[in-house]
Length: 111
Length: 138
Image 1: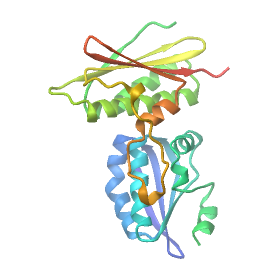
Image 2 (image 1 turned 45 degrees about the vertical axis):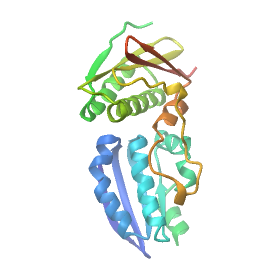
Image 3 (image 1 turned 120 degrees about the vertical axis):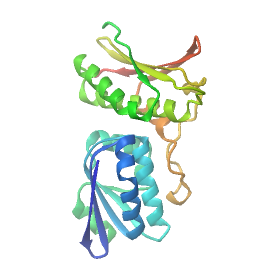
Image 4 (image 1 turned 45 degrees about the horizontal axis):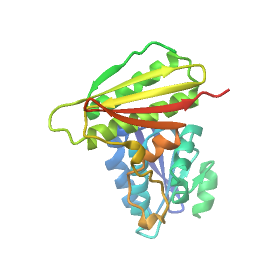
């Protein structure tokens, strides 16, 4: 599991996740993701490179989203692969962390 | 119906990834479609993680998985020596509150039920036996 972060401008932080967000993957990025969420007020999480997500990975995403929300900020997800999106929608994660089809749409939403 | 090829793993978090990989390999060998294979991997991940983290074992334990395929269904059979746990009676959580009120975690059982067509449970000879059925697409 790989996590890269960068300043996307306009106060938005872009986090790019790739790999399997399973128990091993979540363990690998939890600290760094929490740090990114702790430092960001607007966080776009591009998960187009995430091939698998389990409930432990959903926990990582929700924890980050709550940290940002507690500061009055927002976190959104971008471009999940079809089976990953199915998991997100099956568990209704999409009702608390909005999903956008691409980074541009996410940036507009957070503007 | 294919022959049984039950695989046993130590009840340890390090065994979860090999178990999902093994299940995926078996699914591919049975020519299971990609969406169903993904759902099988997810269910193995959730059941194995739950068994290891919440199995209430007093000593090193095990879990085992098997995949049984027919022309219209694939059945994942998950067994472990953990404390009795009837997954069919367990709450299926999904997010139903605002983000501020949601507690992270606890979504695994709901995912197992929502990603499969049927889940059954029996306790047999001090072993939990969970059968998770998936319908193959037409």
